[in-house]
Image 1 (tube, rainbow, N blue to C red):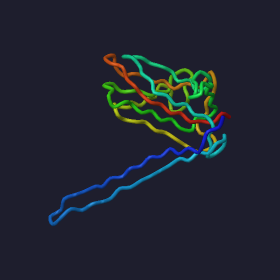
Image 2: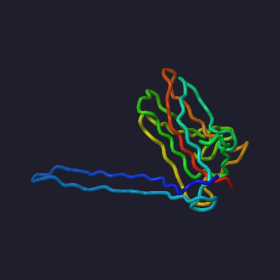
Image 3: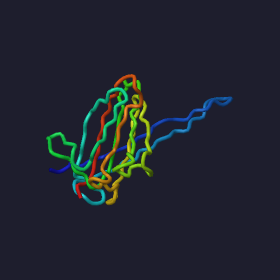
Image 4: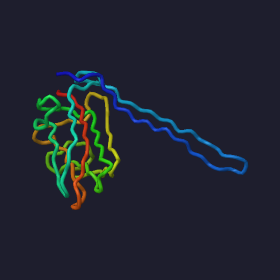
Length: 168
C-alpha cells in the first residue's frame, strides 16, 4: 500500500489589541507552518498511517505498538520503522485528561526521557511532526510503544489518534 500526499499543518491567526488614549493599537499575528510528506520512506516522505478513535475507561492505560499490533483502515498490520507525525485529539466531552507518555520500557523516544508525558486537556490536541529522513526511530521490541492514559478514575475518555511513519 502507499500513502497519498500528506500535509500536517498548524495555523495561528490572532490579533493583540491594546486600548490607548485616542484609539486601539492592533498587532496582527499570523503563522502557518506545514510538514508535507509524499509517498515513500526517505526525507519528506511517509508510507504508513494509523488512525483511530478510541475510548479508555476510568484510570485505564493502553500501549500503542507502532511495530506490529495496530491495524490500518483496511485491516493490514501497521509496522513503522520511523515515526514522522503523531497527533492526539482529546474529545471535548471528556472530563479527564488524555495523557501521552513514553513508557519506561520499550518506549518510542518521542519524549527525551523514559516516563516523560504530556496531558491533553478535554477538547485539546497534541501535534508533533517532522519531515527529515531520520524522524524518530521505532525499534520493534525495544522502542515501539507510546502509552495513552486516562488521567483519572471518574469517567472514560475518548481520543482520536493519527500516527504517520515510514516502513523502513
